[in-house]
Length: 625
Image 1 (cartoon, rainbow, N blue to C red):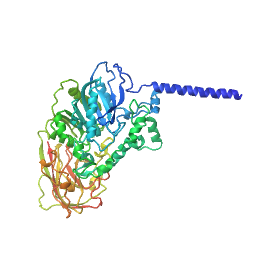
Image 2 (cartoon, rainbow, N blue to C red):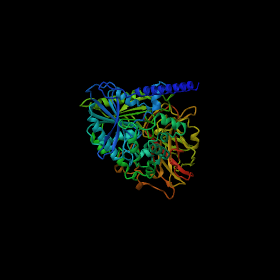
Image 3 (spheres, rainbow, N blue to C red):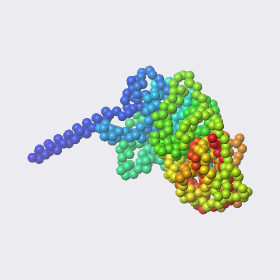
């Protein structure tokens, strides 16, 4: 009997081994997207190292059109990132897909690259040096070495058998800030650039109006430090079972094809000595402060303007009215940079995934839809890269007016046909077109540091994307100093750069002014339209000619030498530019709100959490139709 039991047990083990072997074979034979062969005899997705001038190996993944034919040459689109060019697909996820128990997670699908492939572009995904699977270390973000690398990778791509030797750079957010300086890399193969939702001036990526985005900087620094360690659990902030799931499904960054087990990658990661971004940025209080061994001009598109302009390369720029500083970066670039620019400013969240028009009944799909956005992007690159002689591209701005729900086009900003209207603070918290009847009229306000604009505001979604949602602000406005206009006789379009001018004194020698422009409906609902931020010691107005570029609003230098600290704790006439806007106030009172701090996202100034404003008076002006 024991012999039968042994035979039976041995049979079960054998069957199990056969089943396991079959599972391994099925899993190994399953082709995931990108692993198929093209008619040209090349696998659609390949990954390899490209060696730079200093010996550093840069990891590059190439995605070719699925129907690429032998001898066919196509334009190349290049995205350089420090967020991993592509994750590694773990054996468990591959097995589940092979058994039809799961599909590759949607967040692993690069819809933009897939669409560009469909439009017959080759797409390169590149890990910036010191990140992902690339070698080297990071001395700072967007370093001169990183820009030079982009030029060398583009030169390599131009020589490949599938390339027509014409390269365009593109990317969202951080990747957009690599796409733009690539125009100044001095590489003739780079013919067009597409910075999407990026910062023309890196100063505005770390602060707004002189007020640091402290919490966001720390969160971002923690996440990228984990990614640079190839630590998927740390990057996702997952622990326990969630961490085990991550390791089984997507254990880290994709190694290059010649390093399937990631041993070379592990060696590169162990040799990294990357800067702690949060520590470096914390030392930057003014524009002229050093960030590590660099100044902001060396890592900002605005500081590289001369090199970018000399390239004469056309640009397509996308941004959203309620994405961080809104259209300020895009419109400032349009005003100061001579390259041909196609600018699109919509009711779009960071990355373009949501319709954030505060008057919209639903936030999905975005406007334009994702498909329409991708088509417009591919159409631009077609014009610039498809043929040896590119089509002529003229500068223009397409902008959406929130509330109205319509698109408009212009070649100048502000658009033709607008006029400036001035409103003054008056008695009884009223906004009037006439100045106050009493020369010394003013209001007092005890700062309420509980005031907040929620956890889905325009500043919160810049890291990680997401919807922008401002609920009814009627209750929050009870914590602020509020001025209301009379009810509007009809809808009023506000398009341009509103400016608020204040005179005030304070018990604190410094502070952060937050001003809001809002729509008050007849039933009392308060809808957020726009805002502006200014650190009080940054209020000095300077000669425009002394600035690195011409701003759209008041001329503040944000230099340490121009910082104004009042030992008597009084300040006068700090003009404050609101973020740039295209919106319709819908037949209701307009209102202006001022406060001293937004809870959580920004640094609290003053840090004592005790401030009193007295003698507040002022006026606001805006560009209206």
